[in-house]
Image: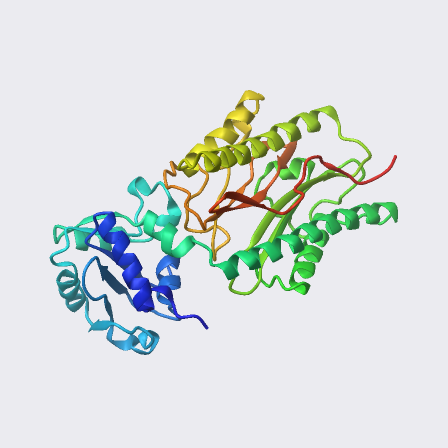
Length: 397
């Protein structure tokens, strides 16, 4: 098992260089009941039940401040450790911990704009502010030291992407075969089959899917009740599925198929708007990489959203263009978002994210296309290979 990043001397020193470059006095990580996945991952925490703080100063030695009953949970921490028991003791020692630091990075988001960065409770922040400390977002630190994929994680993601793609295509064929046999399947039954198939091929972590026909897919996070709707001839079918090898990075894809030999004009128009928005976002990323220019998540969202707005469907694109992917399916790195939040964080080499524009017209239709992008040193690496350009036509007349 690898040593957690902030439990190594090399990890601490790399963070300290960045802290000095960004004008921080330190990075103060807070954790309680696994509410902060950044702290949990970087510090390698198992079960804990009391509040804990770790200060990585820009200069000097890191310090963990933990509750007196949790020494076993922190036995792997190789640096200085301070314990407390009562609340008065905690507040006093917290003050001593932050003393002399004018500006500290924490997992906060101004205006709560980015929920995946907003893990510090207002009460804890208030205690720190009382000591004259400025709290600033650790967003760029999180991107660089938590959300960047290792070589092994990238390889796992690529392997997972092949499995996810193959299972998706097999699921469409399964639905079509059921219709040919005269015994149509249901959204619920196909969902169960997809999950079992992903798991049987090794994707046993963060595994699930969305299977939705026609109007049901207008709810972008649709989940059927029981068996859900029967998948009949002529139905447009959306399949969104995801999974990861244990403890690694997931692949997350969405595909579209029609239980017919052709796609009607209305559906084709909507599909082309979604597909072209996806491709415009990918091309924008390629151009920025070639020009060696920085790019922010919100800029990519603007590009994709602009295409859909130009086609007259802007009001029906109701979510961000993409989410961060790290060890969590919806990770803590930059999102492609200028709708739900204003995500100004830069995409840096090593990050992964989805690109998944969609159009959802209530009680009529839902269409989405989703691929994943690894932001490599040479630009975007897209998975899966051979992503979808046309809706699958799954039955003959």
